[in-house]
Image (tube, rainbow, N blue to C red; front, side, top):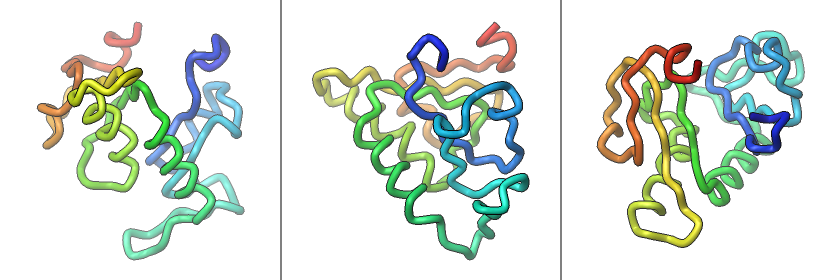
Length: 128
């Protein structure tokens, strides 16, 4: 998706660096909660503060996303949830250009009813 110009940003809540290992360039990834492999972006404890530049980028993603695809997330109240929920809310209101949010995964979330499309399937099958 990134190589085809269809992915603006990947907001990563995990700390594992898997998007980069899969070939996604670092500038396309916002590791909002830090990363175990990145000395300049240490893992943020639950009581800690997010890096201001990454939080500003997260807010920009929230403001400008036409479509958000949430993959394998529990949408359990973390700051990054807004990147999924805001486009869904804009689409529900019928705002021009808003396509909504797709949530893919087996685990139910408290926000399933807000998704434009909810897919209950293993990720490799849903995206295969």
